[in-house]
Length: 443
Ligand SMILES: Cc1cc2nc3c(=O)[nH]c(=O)nc-3n(C[C@H](O)[C@H](O)[C@H](O)COP(=O)(O)OP(=O)(O)OC[C@H]3O[C@@H](n4cnc5c(N)ncnc54)[C@H](O)[C@@H]3O)c2cc1C
Image: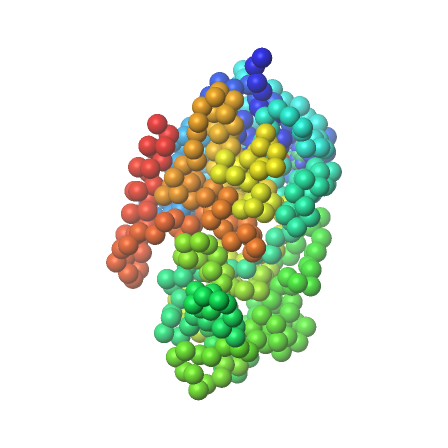
């Protein structure tokens, strides 16, 4: 009997997954709850609706990781990229699109495909058999989310993210910062020196608090309740509760000795913790924030040691349903406990339209290959899509897992000259290596 691939959610990921699988010759049913059941962010019944900005970000495939992801998706015959190109708006180096005709065009292409059919109903349970991809996104409906939670456990499915900024390790000034865990805790030297520490004196701390309080903040979207939990309050909210709150919270200086100036006790310390196995990325511990991006960069560069920091990702707090993928999914994006179900898109803990569509592309191809009895390994980690899937299915620290967008910190490092010029050359080396590896994977 012909095997069918069921895809739940016709967003960025579900649309791309359906297109890829159908083009490999597999029959697909897309289950989409809109327009019958809406979300607070979607406005139409179209597939692949862009719920907020109309940008797919940088289109530079030579020196930018998201531009490289565009390139890979184009090389794989991606529908989202093709329709974005067809409805492109002038936006300098960015790929901005005319959102309504874009979504209408994706919908038209999927509805016209002879192997794709649709069911406009909400899926409320996890299916017990068949081949499934769940791509229901950050606003997965409540009933389905509860069913997923019942399967994965409450700790493994989050309803809000609390993203602390992530910096490239190489951009931290280690003549100011030093490596040490609080009270040198840990059995091994690696554990005793797990954190980067950035010290502040009193004047620096007071100026930092003033800047935090004055910085521009983003508001929650309408319909997004501000569900802060006391364990992950935005740092500016902590600062509003009292000027000393941070010094007794995430910035407490106790148990740390400045390796460069052991005789000087820091008034406050910002700690950064390793964010990936490669050790290329470090997150700012406890620094989840709703400050606007521009304000974040300005305020965080006031921290001694971070004056020239490069940010792989800035902070944020959003309504966002996502799995603890590093513990739950295998490298084929299958739920380990129910391998007939794959997950794709933002619900797997990637962030953004492009990353979600890219994970849909991989899930669609992998599911179709499985149905066709073929073996399809994930793309190698040297590629943008391979770096992302490697990160979410195992490269990320599971305990502190938060959604991730694509960036060069996820790639196996390449040695190259330092400085600004060196960095540009290195990014070009990353993208050259990725293109060759992705082309080989495709063939
Ligand atoms: C308010 C908000 C603003 C955002 N702004 C941006 C931005 O500016 N730029 C950016 O890159 N990203 C933004 N994002 C993230 C964005 O949602 C994702 O990048 C992208 O849309 C995720 O793609 P996806 O396919 O995983 O999910 P979606 O595109 O959301 O698609 C999921 C689909 O599943 C459907 N669905 C949900 N539950 C069920 C169910 N039980 N049964 C059937 N269908 C179901 C939904 O109706 C939806 O069509 C934003 C997210 C939110 C919530």
